[in-house]
Amino acid sequence: MRIPETPPTFQNMMRDALESHGAEKTVALLASGGSITDDKGRYLHWEKLKHLSPPKDLTPQEYWLKIKMARNLVRIPLPLYALNDQPFGFCISESMQRDLHWLDKNTAGTISMGQPITNPNTRNTYLITSLVEESISSSQLEGASTTRNDAKEMLRANRAPADHSEQMIFNNYQAMQLVRDFKDDDLTPSLIMQLHQVITENTLDDPKKAGCLRTDDDNIHVVDFSHSTILYTPPSAEALPNRLQILCDFANDTQSKVFIHPVIRAIMLHFMIGYDHPFVDGNGRTARAIFYWAMVRSGYWLTEYISISNIIKQAPIQYGKAYLHTETDGDDATYFLIHQLEVLKQAVSSLHSYLSRKALEIEETEKLLDNTRVQGQLNHRQLSLLKHAIKNPNALYSIQEHQQSHGISYQTARTDLLTLADKFNLLRKRKYGNSFVFVALTNIRDLL
Image (cartoon, rainbow, N blue to C red; front, side):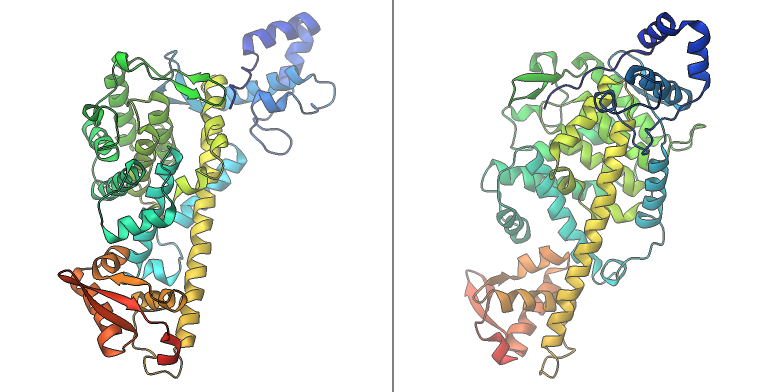
């Protein structure tokens, strides 16, 4: 990744326009109005816009001047500050308004969702799945290399992490659960420190750095190692306590005179943790955890069931560019906001697709049970396990793993498995140490 070209400054563009056209024509140029987007409705950075064909009679620089003038007129300042002590700001484009409206309808309030999510008897299964997915993807974004299957097995079997990568994923899972516990509380520097401590436990070169702000001795930079390029140097360590308090004030000040849409507020919390880089490591994971806190706290409850990291992981360069475009164009956070709004939409759409697949799989399993001795006698958890067992003869299932997968009590998980084994003889029960494991039989279809 390379640092984008810094756009021409407004002052230099005005000087060039005056030198080229004189005051009268320059005033006429600016008075003719402009849009914050191009003719296709895109909010573009200079590095791309300069290669497009500008409107008639305009040079690329004059086209950019008109766009910047329009953006400056509608820019909304934020009580969050860049390295130069200037406030970050943003604009609201037509596409952003549509996306925010779509998210209001599809992630908050009494939205219309599939039965598995709205049914309190089944929703925990999907919440656990989401927590596992976000924990894995967020950790993989920052270097965890464990396979998805191994990571899922670790979390669902509740076994101790076997290596550094598994420890990262395990920590992230604990942090996401902590976010749920604190979703009704204000954000404080202490809570951010606690989140970071959970996220980085047993993963840092210096364990004492977990839950502590970095110091000047840490010498932190954001680096593109493929090109040995420093992309960004965050604020000094001395400034961090004050900046963290300002961030918390922004997070909690939902009744301020200037309305900031809750989704924009949540995204900016994500942005600022990444921008300030207050810790030696784990900043991205902490930023995304705080984003989830803000979304759920504001009533966007469906956010608990989606994984933004899974979407970001598919195009990590675009994630980095969204930061760099903001930093190189006058601290205009609109670029990052647009990127994250699209990530959110894709994550929600992915959830819908996942639910549709799962509903179809359960329906197919139920059809398989038509006119059999177990028809109508299994709950959704047993149907899901049976579907897996049919496809995976000799697979092993434990009570604890079943409990973790569905967020249920040990006794409920035990009853589920014992019913399949003792009542219907679809699993074989074996003693393993002081507990039982259950084995998928190879002839389940015949037994049914």
